[in-house]
Length: 253
Ligand code: HEC
Ligand code: HEC
Image 1 (cartoon, protein in one colour):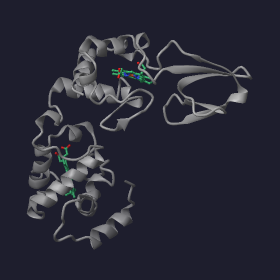
Image 2 (image 1 turned 135 degrees about the vertical axis):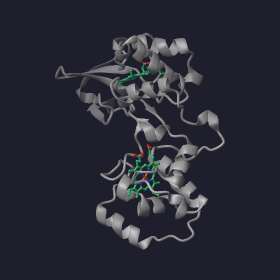
Image 3 (image 1 turned 90 degrees about the horizontal axis):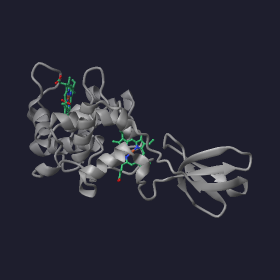
Image 4 (image 1 turned 90 degrees about the vertical axis):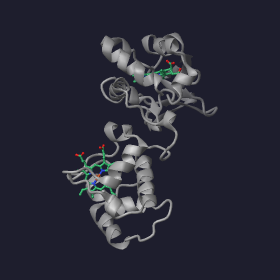
């Protein structure tokens, strides 16, 4: 996916008046008809809201199809059911899910549908904002890579183990996600998630998770395990009700 500039989007709108869109043409239709108001990656524009925010992410597949088909009375969101076949709307909705980082629609599978429990929604908002969890963890393929992906967490860990991981991150460090301390010959010390890629060099993940920084072993004095987890104990600083919300969200994963 790449950001389209205004003129590319316009050119597309002019050239792709699709009459019989088949499966998979959701992207083309989206780019021709929806981009103007919702943006090239669903980020939202002056005339239309984001399609990748928490609200749109949480929409059930049924509601997503319904809002595209029927529009929202009294807003700029038209009823596209008048212009497109059910199949085309299905394709467009699938593409909206792709923009949200999801595999597509999961109709008929209520279990995997997004939750509408207000506790879970509040917890997800905390996760993605104030509590800062998303900088290090992914779910639904979005987020950082310093910590493990949290999809399917509740199937993997008992509730009590989830709580323990949050309250005391260093007690039980997930295999492969521990930190190492690298001391260089010049005395500088770096620590972070560690990869031992070769005989010549070690790599330490930068604290924002974005880069792996290479340190050549001929300049490294020592490498040792860190006792501390890379995960901060932010959870302990949240209020009781915020903790409850965050736990509700984690248990929904
Ligand atoms: C003229 C501008 C415009 C166009 C074009 C447009 N939309 Fe919208 N859309 C809006 C506005 C404004 C809203 C918010 C309505 C509201 O306030 O509830 C919206 C809402 C939505 C929502 C609900 C999001 C939410 O979180 O509640 C979806 C989904 C959506 N649009 C998808 C589409 C798709 C798919 C297309 C292309 C077929 C499209 N829109 C074309 C303006 C537009
Ligand atoms: C600076 C990066 C960072 C931040 C921020 C962070 N974590 Fe972590 N998290 C980690 C790392 C690294 C691990 C694995 C090491 C460990 O077990 O302590 C981990 C482990 C976990 C685990 C255990 C996962 C498993 O598979 O056993 C859970 C649950 C978790 N984090 C949730 C959270 C939540 C919720 C937040 C926000 C309050 C958060 N993390 C914030 C880095 C982070």
